[in-house]
Length: 328
Image 1 (cartoon, rainbow, N blue to C red):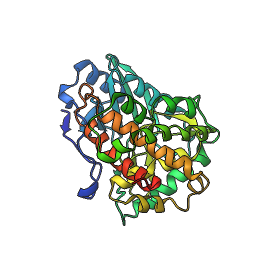
Image 2 (image 1 turned 180 degrees about the vertical axis):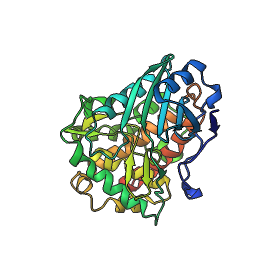
Image 3 (image 1 turned 120 degrees about the vertical axis):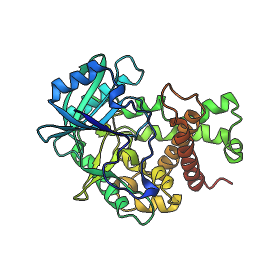
Image 4 (image 1 turned 60 degrees about the vertical axis):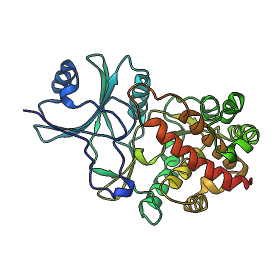
């Protein structure tokens, strides 16, 4: 008999940094029988399924124990879902990652019963703690800073960052045109300035490194040997080495750092030191605009917690932008 467990964290994590059950995941017994049967045929006899609650997509995410003692991690989503393409992108990227990349190995991907499914190595790990004083922060910074050594030149045919992100990482321009009312006093006062600032960084985004594009606490795990692993390679671009490094700042702020403290964590990283301050300031404004714009949209089907997370991220990135611009 297969047993399943509800939202299960890999190992105990401090309460302040536990990853919330942000996704509305189906229980094992709620999944289509052909999908469950297909997974069993692919993997062998399944004894235990532990549903994972992190992330924001509404698909399958489970640690699976097999009768032969093996453990794997399976994730999937209906092939007709708007986010199915991201799962395919993740599989295509993960398959081509160099062996030295700190990421789980892809064991299998394909379609089972009209679901896009990925099977990866299961990691005995916990989510990182990026809060002030945690030793995890320096470990994460060291790992992210070292990614370029493994991922340059870019090992896959990824879109150019300066083109792909130009259509994504912005928002103040659209909010200014819409005369958005749900903005705080500072952003309303500087809306036109933010809209003018948020594209300057694109000129420095080009490069030859594979960029993860979504470095955040939910995608960072630390194993029992204190090694850091980066998961969910669904948004790859080919670009400058500073992109993944600088992405850490708003997530450090979300974890409790002040903007100055968050930047100090990166002070010794060459990719941070070598990037023009004006580029980083523009990038901070762009991410604040992206998250603010996104947070004001209706929630996607089956993803009820995403907009609240984006609103929190927007506040962190706005605080970072205020710190860097010095605008009153």
